[in-house]
Length: 475
Image 1 (cartoon, rainbow, N blue to C red):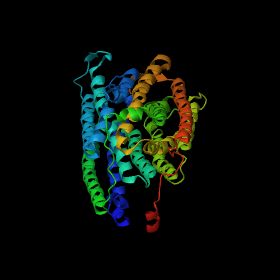
Image 2 (cartoon, helix red, strand yellow; image 1 turned 45 degrees about the horizontal axis):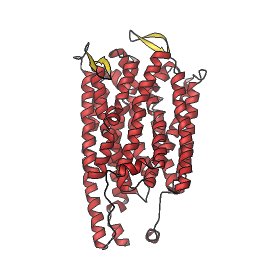
Image 3 (cartoon, rainbow, N blue to C red; image 1 turned 120 degrees about the vertical axis):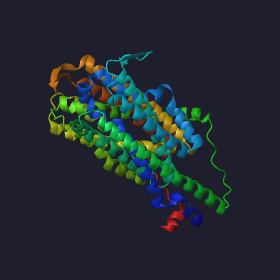
Image 4 (cartoon, rainbow, N blue to C red; image 1 turned 90 degrees about the horizontal axis):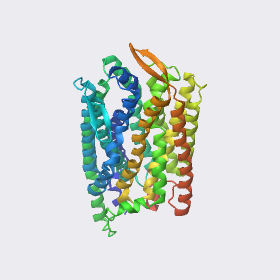
């Protein structure tokens, strides 16, 4: 049996880490685009004459189709039905299509002065609406790519360094976020137009499609090696049961899954929407120069590049997954509370808080995503991940719009002249308290998850790496 195990492609360290690297690059490109507009809020309001409410409406579009048209859930079902290769390439192409539309809307002047009225959504500038539509299409692609990447990692790394691999993939993706936050504003200022960073993103995403095509060939070889190994060993173990639509109800009936899903939406709602406004926060509260204000929020994803794999490796070796999530949520809560304190307004404090936020941002995902395969069977993983992402998208859709509305309604403190144009100044205390409340709720869910694990024996507190006797003999 030892010889047969060696013939499975994923048993090769070089092969599985190469597969991880390829998938991670596609996610890197997607994450760069997801946050490329975050540092450009002030420039968008200046060059395109958008209000904070319009900017919040645009950023909220990320989850429109995922949430209301259930496209993310459909994507998860397609993933479980048709596999990683078909789903991954299709999702990458959707990212390219959405980014193309978004770039067109931001770069063209032909939409100036045109308003669009739609049912429910109301009346908005045509440019805002078209950019939001492109962002919504991109949101479908990047979220489905994310669940595809997660299932691919489970396929290649289950029983091995799964949390470390997920942490590495998140690190590469967060590098995209970090570069978006730290480079998009300088690129836009040097080129003279806010759309230039989007063009750079579009080129990267096209390369990402090609990268995932290479992964698809490796995935096909992995499947072939598994079939060959089973045939050579005369393994009569039945194949895993195929996914059925009724499995959705099994997932939704799992209390542990719900605790992870709700913890996920609260945790990410306390971080990603914060990043949409963090650059402006650095300028408004901490007096940071606009040319490098995006570099401070960029410290957060840079911190995760190192810490997420580190904490994932700890989870692989010693366990304590639920405890790691609770600690991370506690750090997030404390940081947002300190951001809300009016007297703490020196730029050095902002640096320290962003570094702490990066640690908290690393702790929760390093344990949360590798815990899902311990609760959900492999055949249901794509749908389970997609349902979690669907719940998460409610937060990613609603919270930016909420914060934009709160800023315009309650937080305007005056106006200032930027590049010859008057723009509002804001007090960010109320938004920071909103983010803090999400962290508090996430802490409570972490404790509930820990209790559920103790009842059901999922093994969330146990190590991920399992060494079979044959593996010990090889070592």
